[in-house]
Length: 204
Image 1 (cartoon, helix red, strand yellow):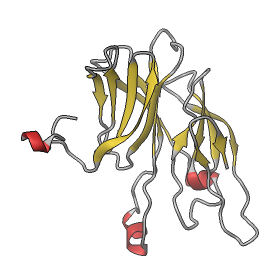
Image 2 (cartoon, rainbow, N blue to C red):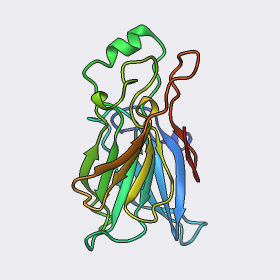
Image 3 (cartoon, one colour):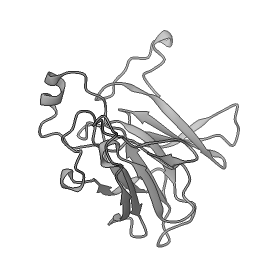
């Protein structure tokens, strides 16, 4: 990212904080890279020796939770190329951290129109209400974390920490709609089981 090569004299000029690569997913000749508080980038790697950024979008600020994963839908939806991004709700380590989150939106799932890579357009934001999980006020994180890193249709399988597994249909990318969920029960010692995912599976 421009501004990161400080050894060569570049100076960071971005807003926000913690601009770094979380990870990238390859789809054909493109890398879809989540850059934490820097939003996301699409990188052309047709010539792997000369990677070239062809798209970027950053919604931090105003939204505080960093971008964890971004990827395109396999097929066009309504004639448009659509991408999905998911934030990760950052950990907090003290009562003061938790108190500072009051009034702050939780990490969310996003849809974007990426038909024109030089003009990325945000379409919608999907959140799980605190009313939709009995664990929204328990110790630890509640918002989004990760999604299954493969879109075979319009269903997105997303882990939501204390919100469990959420299945969101993006058939209408302007109105993502939850079509299923699973919230695990507490363990025998009363601890909340939280959802997590990996690249090929979604588990709780």
